[in-house]
Amino acid sequence: MPSFNQTPLKYQVTNGNSVTIMLGDVVIGFGQTATPTVDWGTEPLYGIGSSLPQDIQQLRINPTVSIDQFMLTANGIAVLGYPSTILEVLSNNSFDFHVMDINSVPIVSYVGCVASNLNINIPSNQIVTETVSFQARDVLDPLGNSILTGNNALKAASLIGGALNTLGI
Image 1: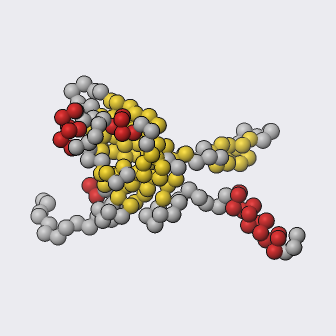
Image 2 (image 1 turned 60 degrees about the horizontal axis):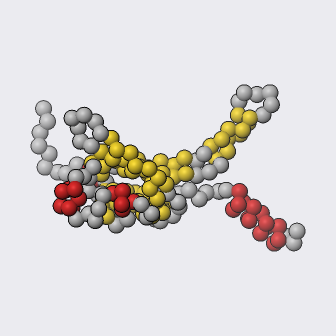
Image 3 (image 1 turned 30 degrees about the vertical axis):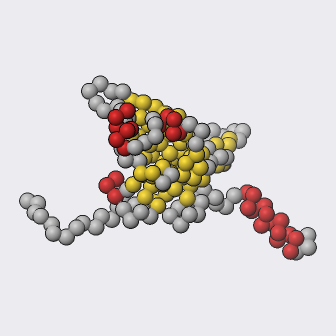
């Protein structure tokens, strides 16, 4: 039988109760779900005589973030002091999107996010929600370093070129 525990639990995993969603410097108060994803645009390359790929290339990086939230009424927008509906705020604007832990340290930050689409879900006998998807220019770790810039061909080419110049070739 469970009993009262006087000491607070120290969870070893991040959960939704210890995360804050921020769009710019504003906390999304009615955000229900945040879904950050990164698509590397992988493309298998095939050769003659084999149905197996010879190589798989990461051709492009496409970070996206989606936010599911309750759709507010005009009264809800006024109570929270928002300037207008989310459609007017998102049009022609760029945002930084942060997922913060309970200590206000960013878990992940999506930089230069531009809204790409808005979906409204209107189910019967349930709360109306809206999902906003953003395209991002970069994804940063808690220290502010890009997690998308890795060992790529341009860096390798510049290193090889520098080494050849050092050797006098």
